[in-house]
Amino acid sequence: MATESSDNTAAATVGTDDEFVRPIDPGQYNVPDWEAVAGPAAADPQAFWEKEARELEWFEPWDKVLDDSDAPFFKWFTGAKTNIVHNALDRWIDGPRRNKLALIWRSENNKETRTLSYYSLNREVNKMANIIRSMGIRKGDRVTIYLPRIPEIFYAMLACAKLGAVHSVVFAGFSADALRDRIDDSESKLVITADGSWINGKIFKLKDIVDDAVRHAPTVENVIVVRRTGHEVQMDPLRDHWLHDLETLPIANGRCETVAVDAEDPLYILYTSGSTGRPKAILHTHGGYMVGTYSTFKYVFDIREEDRYWCTADPGWVTGHSYLVYGPLLNGATVFMFEGGASYPYPNRWWQLIEHYGINIFYTAPTAIRSLMRFGDAWPNRHDLSSLRILGSVGEPINPEAWRWFHHVIGKDRCPIMDTWWQTETGMFMITPTPSVPLKPGSGTRPFFGQEAEILDDAGNPVADGDEGYLVLKNPWPSMLRTLYKDDQRYVDTYWSKYPGKYLAGDSARRDKDGYIWVIGRTDDVIKVSGHRLGTAEVESAFVSHPAVAEAAVIGLPHEIKGNAIHAFAVLRMGYEPSEALRDELRQHISEHLSPIAKPDGIEFVESLPKTRSGKIMRRVLRARAQGLPEGDLSTLDD
Ligand code: WTA
Image (cartoon, rainbow, N blue to C red; front, side):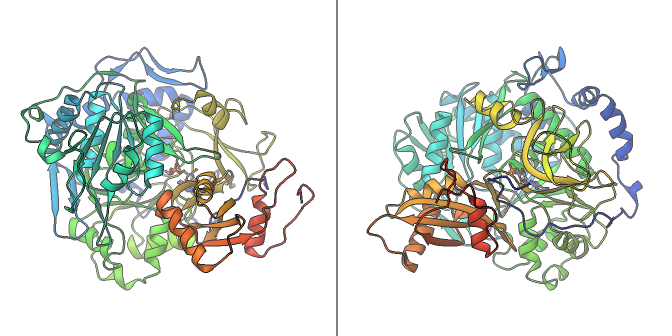
């Protein structure tokens, strides 16, 4: 499937169709057997979702489970009134989970722990909601959240949702330029941030970045600042407020009413990278998103009352939204969040935390597994990991070697690995096993209950089993994106126009003889670097914002740890000469103007870029060149 733009095949994802890893005792899980749920759900997906929705509380019931009269603008649970925070928090406060731990948080320096019961988390969310309400935030208003992995990010997200305001979380590793674009596009009135974050013992100055971004953002009226690192920051007396000062105001106290919203009212927007141009604002709503994340979390992780669940994702990405914040709280689970990274100060940090807190369910990313695997088995082996029951993987295809290491060395061959394929757009797991399903290392197994996937060729015909093609989803699902914020047309064009009536995922995949799906990689200009989603266009525009660069093209190249690494080709302007110093300067420039995660591994200076006669960059040719492979058919090359 050599489309001109298909340039990201993940690192060696070759699994074997016949390698089954079966559960030791499928009967040990509380969730029903796959077939028992999948059969009826396939026969009537809406009935399945209606049953799931009934496990949650609604202020008013729905008239219709699915309204597809304006497809692809699908609506779920129309007519119903609810609020995701009512189900994630309020309903636990008067019941037996009132004093159960909702959140356990550990600081990077290992010196601080914060534990919040459902009661306490609710109190903090009420406080934050009272504060932002007093700043004029109401239903429908957008709030940008730019916070590190600290409990306040839970308070901020949930406080917005409680009021019916729309949160837009921006990963606290994005630059001022990227943050400004997202604040502007969302027209946020309020930004919630911190003075800084801790990254491997060093301070990353978030407030400085916000100052830079907000200077040119006319919609922002207030900035709330959480004190985290304690270094000196500039505070604009009219615009900026320390959270700890606001918390002492009388207005912060007391219960803040959870606003009843329509099931279809927006819950959040989350910017993610697409094929072309600026990032896309994925829009999710209260009702359907709530049902989807609740249900998938319950079935896939077999969550139990006494469990401690750890998702290593940052709340700045969709995994953090769905499976660090909303999914677990909707299930009344105990969540663990760690401020730091995987191997600071030593590569046993995560294993030590699993042992210390008795983590039962551990959900992480292939890139982290690969990087920790590199340090050898002795690091995990010195820890008691026997509390673990279920493991999970997300973000990119997991290569079978990493899968087997995770299964054997971390899970001691006892813990099934839930390889969950999904996207910012899907809001919830779409292709995933449940714990009793026989697994194959490297495959996410089959579509979740009520869903069907197809692998199609360019013309829209299903390909033969074993052949690679475009992955599409056939049935609408409750937590699907509703649109791209302020851009309905782009929503239709991106996801629903290649194959009308079917959702185009943007991934290539194959299905094997057992119906298991193997996701291979992106088919568009999205590059997954360490599981982070980046668009070639964003990186290229960061390049050309440097005075030395006339034109740039970036591609993803397979990388042992990161899955893909960014490799760039730059055409210099007159008067600039290629040099090692310029290369370093450009790397630094990308880091500052987009994000450190977008730093290219390789930069090649070239005279010109290979283009088609219509001016499209031939990434296929660039990739072949970078890897020293034959360049293939060059008949469409302009020059
Ligand atoms: C990739 C992350 C293979 C895929 C939740 C998808 C995966 C993109 C998997 C979405 C997986 C995610 N196996 N590939 N288990 N999970 N992907 O929006 O290419 O950051 O289209 O959402 O990640 O990335 P996003």
